[in-house]
Length: 254
Image (cartoon, rainbow, N blue to C red; front, side, top):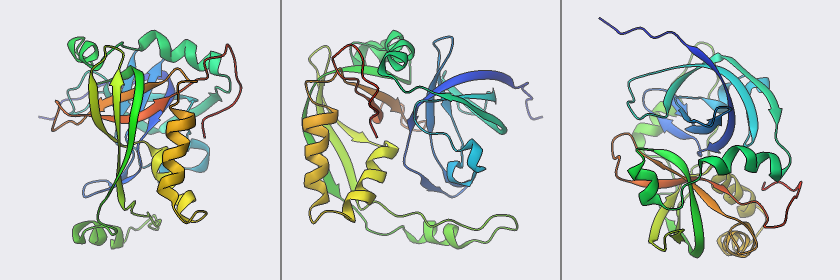
C-alpha cells in the first residue's frame, strides 16, 4: 500500500539551481535548493523548470511559496514540490537581505556539515585554487536522445544544449582542507553557452571571471554543497554564494 503524505506549505529562498539534465523518468529535471524562512534547507525534486508556466519559472534569490511533501528520497532536506501550487513572492536584490537568510546556515567546513547530518548546505571557502574544465561528450547519449525525441500529448520538447565540459573547482574550506569538487550550478552551464558564442576561448574567460571576480578574495565566498541520493558520500558544488566584503552592494551575481 502506497504511503500518503499531506503537503505542507513553505516559503523558500531559492539559492541553488543545477543545469537541467535529461531524465529517463521525468524527461528533464533541475535540482533546486533553498532555505525556508525558518532557516531549514530544502532540496526540491523533481522540477521540470523550463516546462513550468512562465510566472512559476523562478530564478536564484527568488522567494517562492509552495506546497511540499516527503518522497522516496530519505535525505533530511529532500521534499517533492507540488509545482501547481508554486508562486514567486519576491526577489532579494541586496546582499544584506541574502546574507540574512544564508549565513545563519553556513558551516565552517564540509566535515562539520557532514557531522551535523546535512546533505545540502553552504560551506565557507577560504580560497579557490584552480578552475578546471574537463572535456566531455559533446552530445547526449543514445538513451537521452531517444527520450528527447519522445512525443508528448501536451508539451513540445524544448532544445537542451549539452555542455561539453565537466567543471570543477580545487578549493580550500574554512578548516584548511582541500577539495576537488564537481560544479553542477545552472550558472556555469548558462555562462558557457553565452561565452561560447561571444569569445574565441570561452573557458579562459570563464576562468578569469570566477577566479578573479566571483570567487576572488574580495568576496566572502561559500559553496552550496550537496550530495547525490545514490552516492551520499560524494558532494558537489550546486551553487555559489559570493557577497562583496563591503557592507552592502545591490549588485547581483548573474
